[in-house]
Each structure stands twice: as C-alpha cells, then as structure tokens.
Image (cartoon, rainbow, N blue to C red; front, side, top):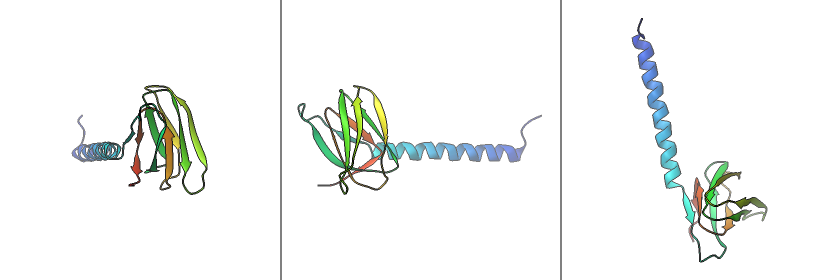
Length: 115
C-alpha cells in the first residue's frame, strides 16, 4: 500500500514549512550576529539589544562577559567563557545592555545601537 495523495500533499506542506523556518532562522542569525573585536587585549564594550530572550556568546579567549542594563545598571554575567566555547544567557527582549569583555566575541541574535 502506498501513501495516499492527501497524505503526500500534507507531508510536502509540512516539509516546506519546516525548511522555510530553518531558512528564516538562519537569515536572522546571520543578519543579527555582532562581533565585538579585540582592542589589543583591552576590555571593550558595545550596546546591544536581544532580539529574543536568549543571547548566544562565543569567545576566542578566556574572559568574563558582563551585560549591564543601561536603564537600571543591573548586571548579568557569564563567568569565564573558555576560548572557542559558547554560552547562552537569558536577557530581556527589547532592552538595551552594554556588553563588556576581552578578546573577540560573537554575540547573536542582537541589534547593535548606532553611535
């Protein structure tokens, strides 16, 4: 027995939706990935805004990563990211944070505040 035509159409539709979601997510990740570049070993900072509730951070050296809410001054810390490792942190969607760290960091998915 084969799959009925109706089931094939449903399966193709679900597959198309699944592929569209993967493409959309990949596009967001690419467009909203920010690299905080090394400044000759000095700590540096930039203001970011999470697109969702979770921000992924990947570093190329051992460092602490500090997110400071620009309105309240409350700090959120990823303690000691190891070179090449990535960590996730929960931050409030739509709020602005100053991120401070050493080394080169890739942070996503976020918006970056223009200066």
